[in-house]
Every structure is written in structure tokens, then in C-alpha cells.
Amino acid sequence: MVEARLLQQFEELAERLGVKVLYESLDQQEFVVKSGTCTLRGQLVAIIDDRLTPGDRIRVLADCLSRFDLSTVYLVPAVRELIEARRATPPVT
Image 1 (cartoon, rainbow, N blue to C red):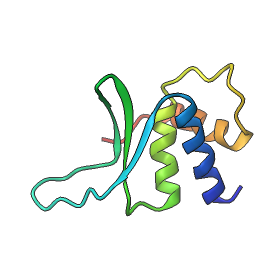
Image 2: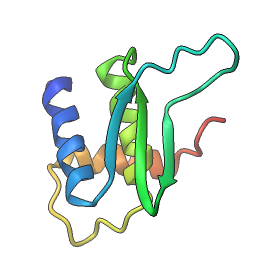
Image 3: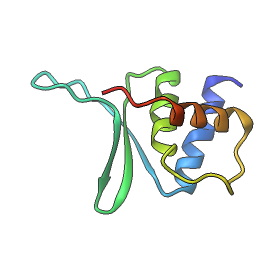
Image 4: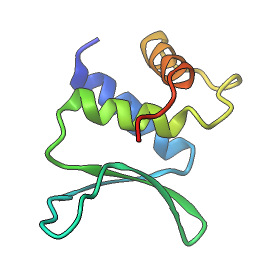
């Protein structure tokens, strides 16, 4: 599956699960800011550096969405495989 279409699938899944996805410039001179997730006013938010490649954006979203029980949610096989792979891999800090 083409990365752009795969990324779109992840963004749509995030929306269905109530996760807000923000693409922002995380280029800070004073401190290092990485893409990831946080809870803001009770809502899970995925903040993704807008300079990341589509593949890296997919990895951030896969990490975020891997915390959900998706056993009853239909996912295209490529999306499910990437999420399961991220579940099996501890996040890099």
C-alpha cells in the first residue's frame, strides 16, 4: 500500500477513536521536542513534527493507536500489521 494512502488510513482510524492528530513544527532551538502523544483536557492528542516523512508519521500514529483494543474494529491488513508490530516493539525514548 502506498505510504500516503496508509497514512490516510491511520488518520481516519485516529479520528474514529477520538484521537486528535496535529501536525506542528517542533523545531525548537532551546530544547528538544519529539513527536508523540499526550492527553490535553481529557483528549488524547498525537502531535507530529510536520517535517517527518510519511513513514515516520505512520510509526508515530501506530505507536499511539497501539494502546487501543482494536479487536472489534475493522482495519485493512497493512494497518493492523503495523499496529501489532509497534505493540511488540518497545517505544524508543
